[in-house]
Length: 534
Ligand code: UTP
Ligand code: MN
Image 1 (cartoon, helix red, strand yellow):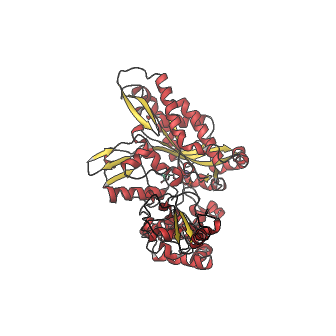
Image 2: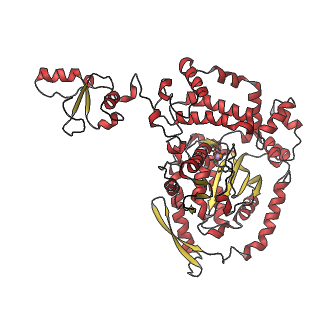
Image 3: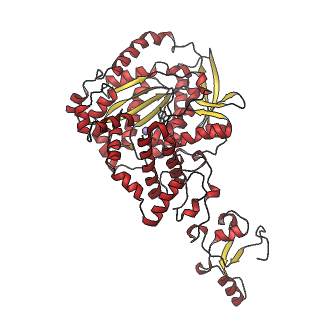
């Protein structure tokens, strides 16, 4: 080496190393990428130049491999940030043979140890998530030996898979009848691990035995059992889009100007899911009052709803600062929501098989922005022109700045609706608390099922002021949320939830008018939904 590598006059680097990453490290750089456009060549090139008496072009056989296919991969530990919310975690990654195994161990620990010791399950999940974020397949254990989140148990499993292709422990778990029954029973809508264990204790091992013996009056279990096959058939993207379209049509009737977003796994790019999660908000904060009961009535009157339960909002501002322990199986929030089952024509699912997979969800990210713009226009053209009691608020939505007319409490969201509203609440509450709501007896409905399939749907209503936090929360993944919330607490002295972000240092709430701002407020780099698949 005759010159400093930083100098722009350096065009070629001649080396005896067999890969460019090793050269970079020798030069005190992080990786071969830091060598920019400089050619890293073997001694052979130098010899050829001497022989020719001039600089010869670099041929394929002169080149030193880039770092990617090295025999000795550099340790990746130094580059892995601690929290999953600081890492790209794509849906398709390079280490499924390890992550599938680790997530079986997670599931087993979750079911076996239940609420007492969820940390066991989490340890496997964390290890799995680190591997999902690696940019290449793991080839030797030494690459991850010092990574904080990969503990000795996970390392042992990874080592076994590296050597034999499988893990004996994982194989054993998969073959364990107890585990198989637990998985079968907890897949029933409304059944958690505690009740699944009761079923096993009774000696049941099939869905039919549960159907014959279970006397629960819980509406979810009754409908869940009757429609078990439907509900465990994965929901396709075409079906999710169809459901979104149907709900949108009804929302347009009962809550004009509302913004809707398909969230959950579909927003993260998944092609199938176990349910469809739809987040709804209106740019005028008070417009959402009473909207969900009206929406459900509208859906019901079109014979779309099979069953469901409406939950009123339990939100109050103190929740933003209260120290709530995260539930192991998800982050319960306080939004007004409807959890239920709707009917989707069979042809929608069948059509999906032939359809172009990239069609609608690729737009997922922008859809929200487009909706916002459209809806804001609708709002402005409708009945919100008056300046009285309005305050204009500028919101940045993605790359767009959108001006909303915010209307204060006085208009039709108040007394006019509330008279009839109580009736609607009452009828919905009645329907939801009874075991066989007005829509009939689950088994009878199943017996006379038409050309449709039952699909689980969650409809969540968020106030505008909380919307972008709700969007991040309901987009998930669950592990992304877990890590983002832990990161907020430990690293930022903040509390993050689907309702907002509270900064204890400043003693105030941090507002967000775009998803990006949620990340900005947390001082996190922005990750697209597709990169939140941890
Ligand atoms: P899901 O359980 O539907 O997960 O919750 P998912 O990722 O969409 O999985 P599939 O594809 O349906 O199987 C969706 C998101 O909503 C959050 C969860 O944390 C998850 O990120 N969530 C769920 C809440 O924020 N609050 C809740 O009460 C429930
Ligand atoms: Mn979902």
